[in-house]
Length: 399
Image 1 (cartoon, helix red, strand yellow):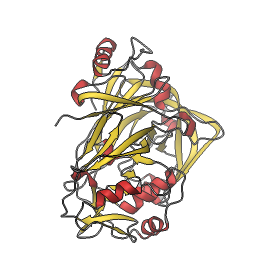
Image 2: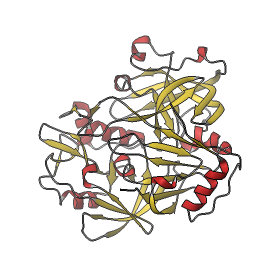
Image 3: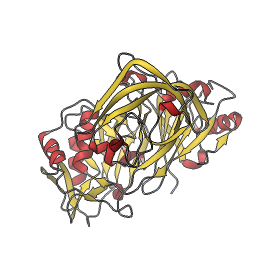
Image 4: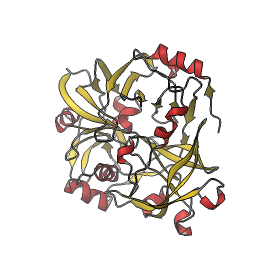
């Protein structure tokens, strides 16, 4: 895998040109580099399972319809990568062993498939083996455990080891080793774990929380930020330490981040469906690359599907579906003075039945906030600025 690397001076010139916000570099000789994603194989996409996982991830109870639909897996069919989107992962070196991990701005754990799993649970995955690393050290007494509403779960112990992402190396990074994983994780054979990029406060290790890779890497970067340029139907990339001006058009609009809950949380100021009028509304939202769908207040969801012929809420699916042949309008979301447009075709997440499809926009009922997941993020260029006063930046992509 090739990683492009810019000098610090070039990176800071790009940063200054790109942003109306002044940044003080932590390290004038710091690194700036790109981490390209790799495409995973086709996988089964399930709208109900995707929704159930989000409720558990954010510590809330899924509505009964969502629970039942996820448990029954009703209507789930295998998605063709030509018709529906795929999973994209990033290569990460852990103790000199390369794993393909999911970069997740909605969580703060770095956990991996490991040699401590039963052999049948390792099948199809690259696994981290601490005995094959000269820098691994058991973090005695530390454990971790996660579980999701779709029934997936993982748990294990913690090692400290050298982790390399692109051009940046962090020594003594906390790495959570899976000793047990559920069948849902086992079956996702392309993904070897997760690298969380939210704030340290929501790391799940106990008794002592671990710092994220990004938090540990900030002193080595030319600027304390990373950008996400995710794409629909193609591999995207994450850039660390700099902003690539070729990846967006127009100005970047920045908004403050509320870190109280440990997420990249911000306020969105309204929405419009298609060419309709803009509705002003204060929407508390989270930018989460680890969540597939776009979760909005019920009023916005109702307004959207009112413009989709044949769309309806289907209790057995736990969400909104529509005829796969339906014409889908765009949705515009306000962020500061910027109007972020998500194209209509992005709203077709996956097949629900042989003739209907599961919507990429769903209601945030019971979650407590909106989640701007991959359906939204793949349409935008996003800056995650982790300076002492964190910010999120949004800009349109070149057409």
